[in-house]
Amino acid sequence: MKENVIREYIKRIVNAPFNLTAIKDENLAYYLLALDSLIPLEKIKLEGNFLDVGTGGGVPGVFIGIAFKHMKGLLVDASRKKVDYIRNTCRMLGINNLEFLHGRIEEQKNLKGTFDNVFSRAVAELRVILELTVPFAKVGGRVFLYKGREYLKELENAKNAIEVLKVELTEIVEYNILNKNRVLLIFEKKESVDKFPRRYNKILKSPL
Ligand SMILES: C[S@@+](CC[C@H](N)C(=O)[O-])C[C@H]1O[C@@H](n2cnc3c(N)ncnc32)[C@H](O)[C@@H]1O
Image 1 (cartoon, rainbow, N blue to C red):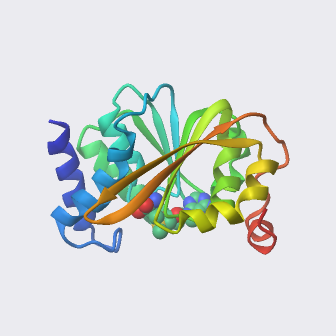
Image 2: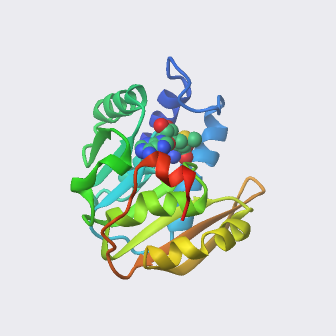
């Protein structure tokens, strides 16, 4: 049942009338988008609400919404075209535990500290995406970041960000999709720090 909905969603994003994903084969997209989103969560107990930062074609947010129907999610992206398309697609498929917001995440100050779980995949290097995600988690909440095999170098560069944003790396889930090494980095937010996220040009000019 869930797999049918996932496959139907994949079909619609692969065949979108504009470039929503670079993957043009539905079966490949099932592995590289849907299973990539869900396999590392298999042994994780998820409760509460969630945010997906830079969801693009709905990755991982739509798949999490389908697999974890008891959770309410907010999917945010800076591209209006993408947000409109995935919102309509989810409505057509009856996926109704998700909400969608067009905008830059760093401008959504009203959402700070309001999510139990914050996800992001393929949006920015670790120290940058930490600044764009951690402020939106509740204290005690978790941030889940999907990364590739280069994650150790990114972790090294993110030492200061981890300290300044008051998060702790609590788990590294290593997994494999079609012979690609993947990891899900799981952080827990220990304290809230008011001044983040900064404006985007500031983040890029002087990353934490
Ligand atoms: C490479 S795509 C990845 C999309 C999806 N997460 C995935 O894994 O396929 C990056 C997306 O992040 C969005 N994005 C980048 N910076 C953002 C920001 N500051 N706030 C919201 N969305 C952002 C872009 O519009 C784009 O759709």
